Length: 240
Image 1 (spheres, rainbow, N blue to C red):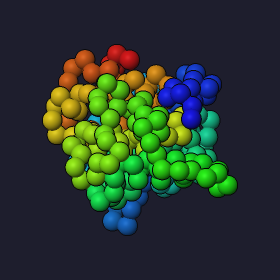
Image 2 (cartoon, rainbow, N blue to C red):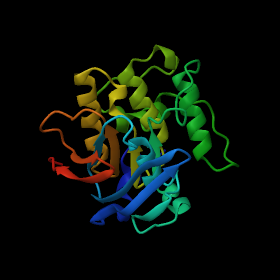
Image 3 (cartoon, rainbow, N blue to C red):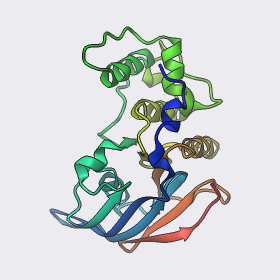
Image 4 (cartoon, rainbow, N blue to C red):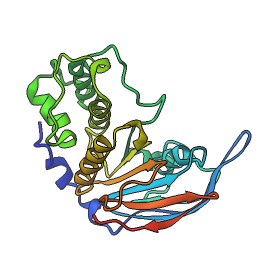
């Protein structure tokens, strides 16, 4: 298996200046507008947080930016790709309710094994994951935080550990863009701050886009776009 950051460093498209450009992006649902029209520019690399109140369409906007939802109108360009199917291929997502939730009754070993098998060629026989595979999948996301035990059930993990595991399993292919919904899933401030630290580290090799309702503490290593009145625009630039 590749070293934790080897796959990241081998992908030259991360050096482009702009990752995401949207103009007039809009999504309409059966009962009216969901979001938009939205204009935004997201630079390559680092962490960009889309901040907006509940019901502002943050989750649907993230799904559109990652190629999971087709906008009703407007244009979207993600690293030169404009078709939702093509954008889908270079974006990973995590933290979305009813989309990538982890089954509570499975073990960490089962999750890691399943993901490695899913990523492997169909003809390759993959055994059950051990400590080496756990470190390769989870190490880049967990950082200095202790890794979960292979035999541990998801139901026994804390909020931070479960979220980090969710991101790690979603991000095994080290795609150009990593999209994460709702940082408020972690309720303790110090744990959420650690998650943002870890995302900032991933942002050295990927473009990370996530969402929040409440502003992050001043000095957080992120850029912020605020979703207000159906319009997204630059609000604050943080350090990277």
